[in-house]
Image (cartoon, rainbow over all chains, first blue to last red; front, top):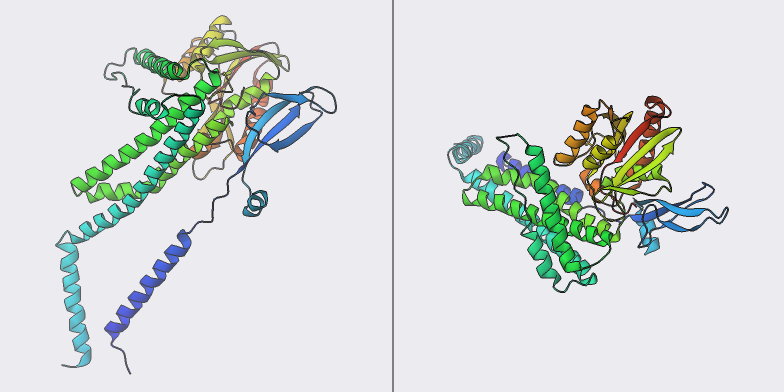
Length: 94
Length: 364
């Protein structure tokens, strides 16, 4: 059986449209957004000690958060920043 | 008539009809309009969701602060406190008039917030002001988008509707950034725009401040034999202070004997640039409506003081949200650049003014 070229053309157009729609649908799906983790960097005023821990409410840069375990100088918050975590990390934490 | 001439004549008829349809009717435009309008409606729904979420966050925060009728308090703010720009056809004194209007508005907002919140800490009052401003911006975005959409539909202006549809992803991203920024301000974490105050904080060390302008502090310290005058907004509440006025006062106080004025700020990056890139140049790195920037420029010009600018690049979303690690790495690079500028361009024994421009939320 030989197909009419017009029907063949219409079929080809139909297939292209279906493939395009499916492709657009698949590529427009985004991975779930992972909330970044917020970290607080603490440094000893004398520079003898440094640590990074999770952000606690009330933290701000310049705040004194205790004494250095090594030299007794004040421990100061020097930075608060967010870090992107992987999906694996986020699920492990939740 | 054979088979091949049959399909050929059908195709020819189809081509002629299609040509008539495409060229001599406005049906394709109508179809396009319908398609773009449907696209926009879906995004408008998302935009409304973002606005509602921002309102919920604001009401919840205001309730925690003890505001008796938080919804009414917020709604009253959202629809008021606009500012009408001064006449620009007659430019004489335009900066002074703009500065006056900005101060009047700022005072009115502070009075409105203070009246409801009573005697609370300065940083909580500042954060509340910024929170209300953010919700106000999201509402404005929603209103403007709806305005153009309805205007496009009313006059079947498919070009306007199409333009709006193409802009929608960017508009949504911006509105979402503002909404996310609320979390940063409520938690009190430093935001990307806080790179200036954070750099300034590094040089401050444990020096005590003195107030130089409203919500703006001056720290006087030493750096490798140079006298360092550091100006930044008073933290850890959300405020940008009045750095231009502060620079003017400090330079006047020193009688113009300043070797250099260095401004540090966040700058919007181009898509081809990386977040956290640091660049330096000449001028005042400050993005205010005008009065603060011109105050720095005029002061520097009056005394022929070289004006240096150091910027850390980031996107608008990064500037509004909790400072990312990349931006923080940019801060560390900016500190090194400033140290180099001071060592190479400021002779020992001379004075230099360092101005940390930006919102100081989460930074003392």
